[in-house]
Image (cartoon, rainbow, N blue to C red; front, side, top):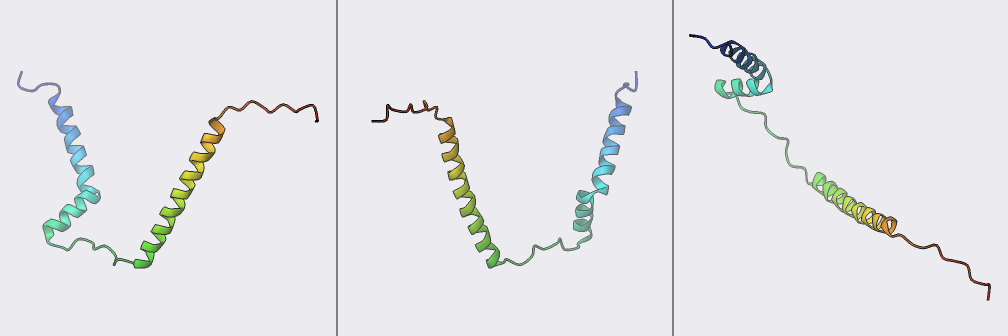
Length: 87
């Protein structure tokens, strides 16, 4: 047999996949590169943003430590203390 019954569905699958990919952002970036247009540049570096990121990193670390402590406390099974005779 010249054509297998799987050739047509596989070819259709790859054709539809190529059209979807090439019409999306990947295809647009590829077209821009082939046309010689410059890619989008990143915004300039902001030192104030670095400070905010460091502050947030510190706060997240502190929250992780508090959560770990709370989990350890909850995981401990304690016997309830019995009241004494009042002496």
